[in-house]
Amino acid sequence: MSDSFTIIVPERVMIPEEEARALGKRMLSWLREKAWVGSPLPGCILTRELGYRLTKKAAEIILPEDLPLFTWVADHCDQQVYGYLAIDVADELKVVHHSGQGGIVSATCPVCGQEIGEQYYDLIETWWNAEGNDDVICPQCQRSSPLPAFKSEPVWGFSNLSFQFWNINARFSDHFLAAFAKELGEPVRVVTGKV
Picture 1 (spheres, rainbow, N blue to C red):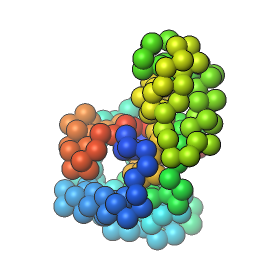
Picture 2 (cartoon, rainbow, N blue to C red):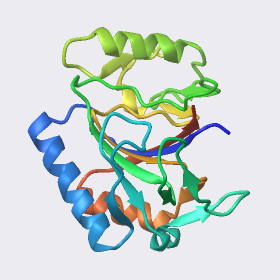
Picture 3 (cartoon, rainbow, N blue to C red):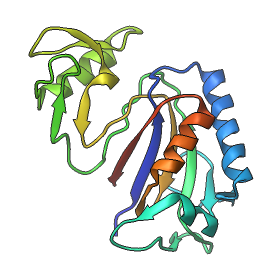
């Protein structure tokens, strides 16, 4: 079985490190207050950051897909968990959160609405190599737009701050995502996939 992820990513691309860490702590406190996130899971996770177990109560914020929320047990860990959360503040300011297996099915320009397909990868590379600017030029209309404004399927995110929910086999309710964005004080997008 592969590992699945659902990542909540702020729309803001480059968040200063100190602010990103403060936002991460604030959101962890909020999730704990709601009793959706429990104790840390040292040594039992797939990310470099400390993970926090999701509680049974977290089922109220997710919508089950084909299978119900399941219990995941790491091979090297004797703890049963209902998925887990890792909050990551990347060392670099430019980060791409992608869907893992597979690639982009489609991408459209926010100005002209034209499909740019595989050229989306070129725009990401241009953005990655640019100094401090998140604007890229549409290959169809030649107009400049911030990279996150382009719509892709599946959804990709671009922020140095991320809230990574692992192995929940579900998607979040719209109500939860709206509450999350309000608490964060930032619009968000959701990236899903498998590794």
